[in-house]
Image (cartoon, rainbow, N blue to C red; front, side):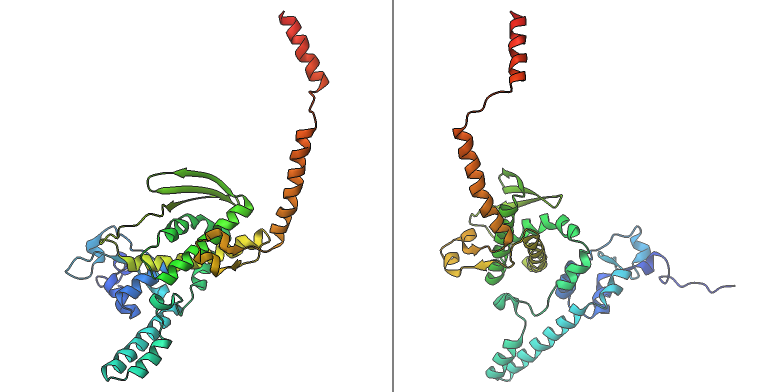
Length: 312
């Protein structure tokens, strides 16, 4: 006779964990846990029976798959988060004992995206895991292009990076002639492009003064921005190389300060040279077409004349 299984050790109760249990198992703070879940594409799940899954008397509201949390245990970003927390504790201790010089030295080593705009970790391996093929990344490009132009509340250097990535993508659309449709709406301008057989639709807001709303968690928005910046950088590199352009393109800071936008970039590559050679040929064909007279086909003209005579 087999042993009687204890409650909560098999079935649905074992397949799910609460958010509190997941944070405790990963030994992370709640903001870092949210950030990691967004980057890795892990979202809360809704069990069929909450009473069976919940192991405590108080009803839990957020559940995750136990396999997803187990998968996060081997994530290298967790080690980076812990290093950052340890460094911040050293800075606070140095300020507490009045050692400002030591605190400044430690702060120079700290990872502060709000000041530098460059995090001390990279999301390259996360992009490769979530998008095994380039087509998979193109299918998620619409959310990326709709998110980055509307980032008005993230740090200034991150905004500059977002604008530059978006302008680089616009240059690709111009060179490859991939843009198919555009539509003006109340929300902004909708664009649709066909990139390697995939239709990408995104929304670009108008450049008006935005009213900051208080019921939005801008920390979560900043987390999405960090992820989409890395994703768009990968996509731009692949698209530029596919049309024979060098990436990243040269960037003129003086023109950018004068609101040059697309004019601040200098494109180089074989694909651009071919376009320059085709333009004079097209212009020559147009001018030759204007000077030469076009006559109808004799057989077609004879059939038309015969039909007109028959109708009379």
